[in-house]
Structure formats: C-alpha cells, structure tokens
Image 1 (cartoon, rainbow, N blue to C red):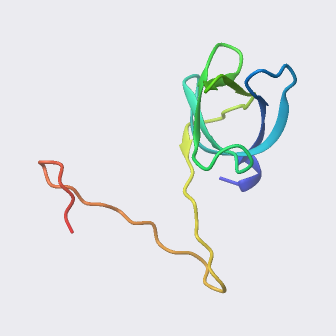
Image 2: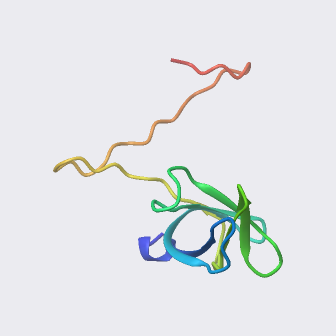
Length: 105
C-alpha cells in the first residue's frame, strides 16, 4: 500500500478544552467499521486504537477526545521499516510458537 494512503489527520481535544487541535497521523492497522490504529508522534509515543461509532473513528484517553475521519478501502496491517544509514530495510522477525504457546528460540 502506498504511504500517502496511510497518512491522515486526527482531531485532538485535550481535557478541559473546547477547541480541537489537528495533528498528522499514520494509520498502522485498519479494520472496516470496527477500528483503526494510528500513530501520532506529537501526542503519544504508542499507537492509539480508535473505534468506529457510526460516522467516524474516535477514542477517549484520560478525558482527551480523539477523533478521525478515515476511509478504509480494505482491511490492512502496515509494517514499519527501519532505515539505518545506507541500508534499505531489515526483515521483520517472525516468531514461531509451539502448540503450548511458548516461543521457539
């Protein structure tokens, strides 16, 4: 999927405020009419899960209201690529698990 299709903006209303601030966000995971997971560098250091509420995706975290209008064409999960220096990318790690659920080293 093209990186430009992953970019969106969120409306962030801090607790006790009435005006929303807009921040650029990157959609990491999306499931149509259920939820999206976005990363916003200016607001938090971890991805936020916004749930569908019939007209847009929204969440409340510590009385901070977050909402996003994002159109999903199909369900997806985006993978991050690390770029260090002149290297292009690292392969993503895949963890194999036993039937008991413990990871195999």
